[in-house]
Length: 266
Image 1 (tube, rainbow, N blue to C red):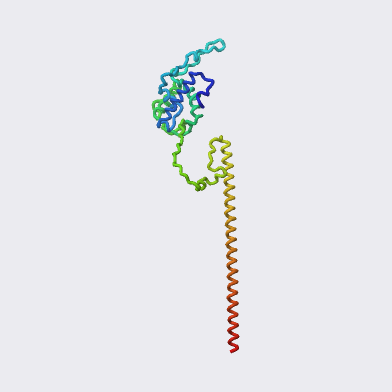
Image 2 (cartoon, rainbow, N blue to C red):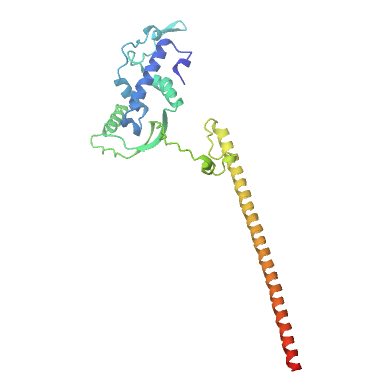
């Protein structure tokens, strides 16, 4: 989603969103962010980034008190009015959805061991909550640094295909096509949405299965015809041999009869 398509935001907010996208892309381009960042970690890193020189600060008039039922109500001000990422809500609602929609980052759930600083912060929060009630004793055992489930923003790595040298195979080009290409095997269906892509792949799989079945039946039929032709040739050869042997024995019998007759006359 392009920033220019946001029609319900002010020009200053559009500039802040653009700056936030630039900062987030710069952070995710580092190798340290390849393992993933939580929203809080990303927020802290983005606050360390400096905006461009021409960035227009937020207008204080927008965050002035509003009149509600005749009374003046002063809403809380964002914590970072001089920075493009003025609050955590701005990061969650304006910047991260654009990056996720552009498939530049994705939200993944994984197991991660918290650092010692995070453990100390957790202890401090627990002590603050228990203040005035049951105070946490100093003899409380140390928290074990066991893996916890966290949700991390990870950059989406684009697999760059290596350029291969094209070879002109001439008349042999057809033999290098994917098996079942006539029914759509090997085609690019990335332009379809998820539902149509799933239906198209299922149809291609069924068509390819029927093509393979017909191919097997065709091969079996050709083998049967070849075997029948072979058996026919064998029968003809046997018949010719039988005729030849009958002729040989007929000539031999005639010779024997002639020899017997000659012997009887003498």
